[in-house]
Amino acid sequence: MTRPDLSRLSLEEKDTLILALLERVAALGAKLNQRPKTPNNLSLPLSHGQKANRPPRPR
Image 1: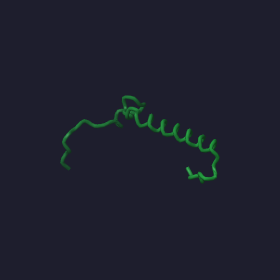
Image 2 (image 1 turned 60 degrees about the vertical axis):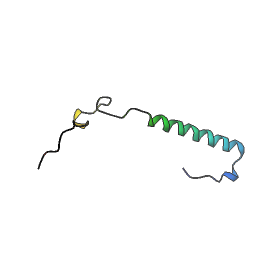
Image 3 (image 1 turned 45 degrees about the vertical axis):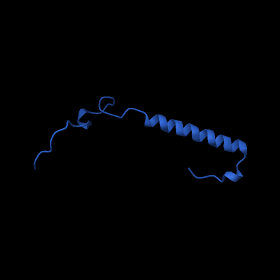
Image 4 (image 1 turned 120 degrees about the vertical axis):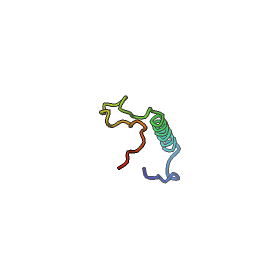
């Protein structure tokens, strides 16, 4: 998003911009509060999930 020259905007344009930004902040905040994606709540095969805690194998 490019930064508009706020001194050239009318009060109504500033209000519209502020409301749009508040909606975007709320949407991003809701996205942050979502559960993490795991094979249990996605249609991914189990091989893409987290592995059990095991000591590393010697190579």
